[in-house]
Amino acid sequence: MESVRAAVYLSVCLSVLTSLCQGQRSADNPLPATTNEALQGFLDEADSSAGLSMEKKASVIPRCDVGERCAMKHGPRIGRLCDCLRGAACNTFFLRCY
Image (cartoon, rainbow, N blue to C red):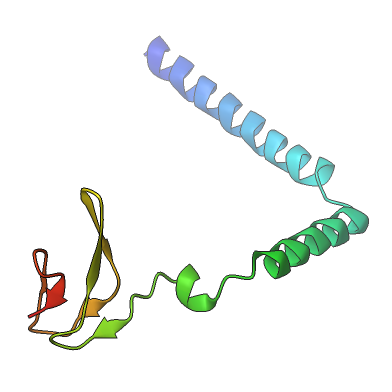
């Protein structure tokens, strides 16, 4: 009986302490407007300096027809140039869609 009472008392104390800490954290930590503006300026500058196209960012691989070269050999590795159409596959020996 006493262990149940102690568990209830402990849970009530922890919930009150948690709610007090949540309120204090949200009141103490707002970012000033100048910091937000500086961060936004930095992010805009980083986006413009990257210069990557949307296709490269989205990892879109172009499609190639049957008979076209679909891969390139770099030593022991094979790099993909394009993705073969549905129903075709890239032959790793000839490096062409078949």
